[in-house]
Every structure is written in C-alpha cells, then in structure tokens.
Length: 142
Image (cartoon, rainbow, N blue to C red):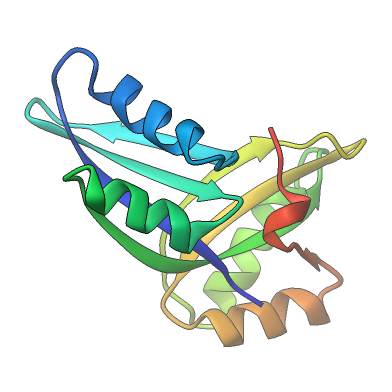
C-alpha cells in the first residue's frame, strides 16, 4: 500500500510557496505532510495531500512543474531505536532508500516515516512482517 506524493519544483523567489499553498487551498485540498529542500536556484517541495490527482491538475494548471510518485508511510514508536531499526531493516532486505522525511504524528507515541523506496512492495512486506504499521494517506496529519 503506497501513497501518492507530489514533487513540485519551486523557484527560489519570494511568494512562490504562498502561490502553491494558496492554489491547493483554493481547490479544497488538505496538506497532510510536506518537506522542502532547496538549492540556490530552486527548491523541491514534496507533499502528501488529501487528493493527489486534483492537486496535480491544480498545480499543472498554475504552470508548476509537478510529478506524482509513490512513497511508503510507516508508523514507528516515538522511542529511541525504533526509527533506526526500521531503516536498518530496509537496508538488510537489499532495498534502496532513495530519500525519506519524518513527521510527528497526532497518534500518541508514534512518528511517521515517509520513504521513497526502489522496491516499495518488498519494503512494505518486510516492514509488515517485522510488525510495523503501513499507513494510508488519510492516517497522516501534522
């Protein structure tokens, strides 16, 4: 069970993030998670939203460079060692971790790892077999 994530290339200029967030808000799209990485010329905004297809179309119509990809959301106990155990498990299974980001969860004692894996099906299987909870998009909130 993967989740659709949007990746948006963002010009490094004042007001560009506001433009993106307002476009999604005006379309009734709820942002569930996001991360922004930047260079001197552009940023890469990754988003988990309530309706990825509508968000994709909204941002495309606004002239944004956007793409959809699959990520895996894993619930982990918010205790020392649990995050590293999940990441180690992925490596031991021979699965490449392309990137990840973590967010605190409203679920007591749990954090969420959003991972882009080269073999998402195998990663999900391994994580489930180890007792990790694989989350749906609607279970993610910040």
